[in-house]
Image 1 (cartoon, rainbow, N blue to C red):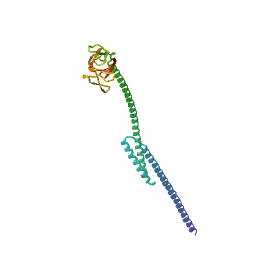
Image 2 (cartoon, one colour; image 1 turned 90 degrees about the vertical axis):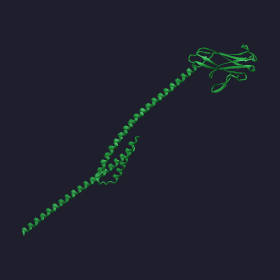
Image 3 (cartoon, rainbow, N blue to C red; image 1 turned 45 degrees about the vertical axis):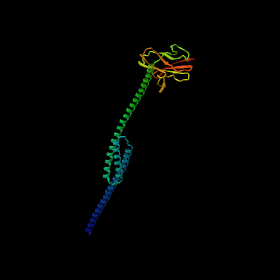
Image 4 (cartoon, one colour; image 1 turned 120 degrees about the vertical axis):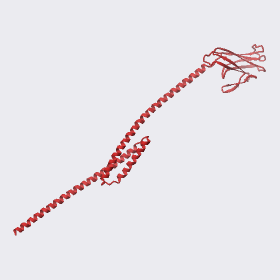
Length: 296
């Protein structure tokens, strides 16, 4: 009986031991499962955080591409292509599940590549900007130099024009005061209009070393008291101040830069009124002398 009781006790202890082992196993399994669950939750949270970080970084890269601008058409095309690629990745990332860690890792590598590409474009744009600034500076200097040359040219032209005017003035023929006489048929002076058969105008072209030498055409215009110009069959016209006007007589004179005595005659065959007569002497198209006489 006693042995039977001992046997029962032994079996009971064995059962208790096995039950204790089962409890320990269950507790261990539960702790292990809980730890793996926590790890899974942690990994999911990390992946979700990485996904959010990638989303933010891609949006930041896209915004930076929006701000990148250059005048280089080829570079602008490349920037637009990269910007479109970033926009596609943003859309792709929005559809990636937080549990897809592998896809998130792949997109992370893409973002790193895109970031490096963008940095290279920023360097290119900065280099182009620096070169453009140099060109702008050089262009500004060239414009300043050109403006200085233009101003200098204008000044030189003004000086040249002034010199031309000075030379032209200096080269202009001058004459001494003229004698204006009425002559009778014996070539003696008279104050009687009825006896006047000829008008004589004499003067001296003054010496001028600058004035062109050669033949000079002298024109004489004699105005009657009523302003009418005396003309005859030998009279014609010449141009003065852009208009053709009549002359009473004209003479060709050989001028060699020295004092040159000149006399011009106008023969009268008509009856003339008494009063004041005025003589006008022209060299070419320039009036150089005038004089008057009173005839009774």
